Image (tube, rainbow, N blue to C red):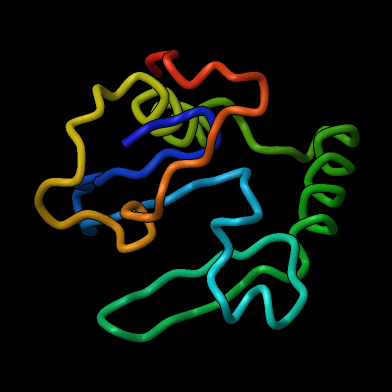
Length: 121
């Protein structure tokens, strides 16, 4: 599924089956994140074990940028698979809530802040 404020889908990778949900809407944060007063929430669930890693991302990006400026950043060959995945997500054709979709994908859609609710993504 894809809308102006979120995208959810499935990636079949060589060694992983990934259900993903990405959103810029704070109303999509799960209750445990809201109770913890978090503005972002990042989690992985691997074979039923959840790993929450929301803290430290701002610092991680800053460190990565510092390394890029000193010439110690990632090479294009290292970054290309990530860029390809983002491209694939951005250009995927939504099929709706079918199969093994991410549980947050069934949340009600928000109205577009500019009234563009009829726009197809």
